[in-house]
Amino acid sequence: MTLDLLTTHYNYYAVVLLLGIGLYTVIESRNLVKKVIGMNVFQTGIFLFFITLAYRAGGNPPVVTEGAGPYVSPLPHVLILTAIVVGVSLTAVALALVVRVYSEYGTLDEHTLEELYHD
Image (cartoon, rainbow, N blue to C red; front, side, top):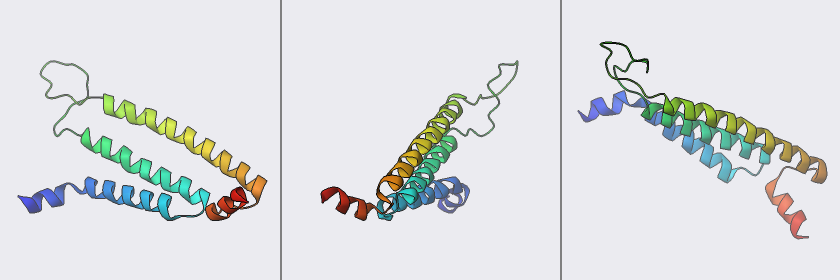
C-alpha cells in the first residue's frame, strides 16, 4: 500500500522539487535575473500542484450527456490559465525593472545595490 502510494504519485515529487529549486534560487541568488527565474520555477511548481489536485480518475469532459460518468471540473484549469497570464505579465514587469536597475547602477548584484543605496 505505502509503496504503491509512493510510486504512483510522482507528480507531487515534481512539485516539491520545483518549489524547492525555485525557493532556493530566490533566497540564495544575488543576481536579480536569477531571482526572477527562481520565482518562475516556483510558480510552475504551484501550477503543477493545482493541476495535479484537479485530476479525477475516469473523469469525463464537463459536457453533460446522457450516461456520462463523473465530470472533471474545468475551474482549476481556467484558474491556472489565468495565473499563467498574470505570471507572464509579472515576469515582464520584473525584467523591465531589472533592465532599468542595470542601466541606472551598472550591476545586478543585490549586495552591491544595497551598498550603493546605503552610501
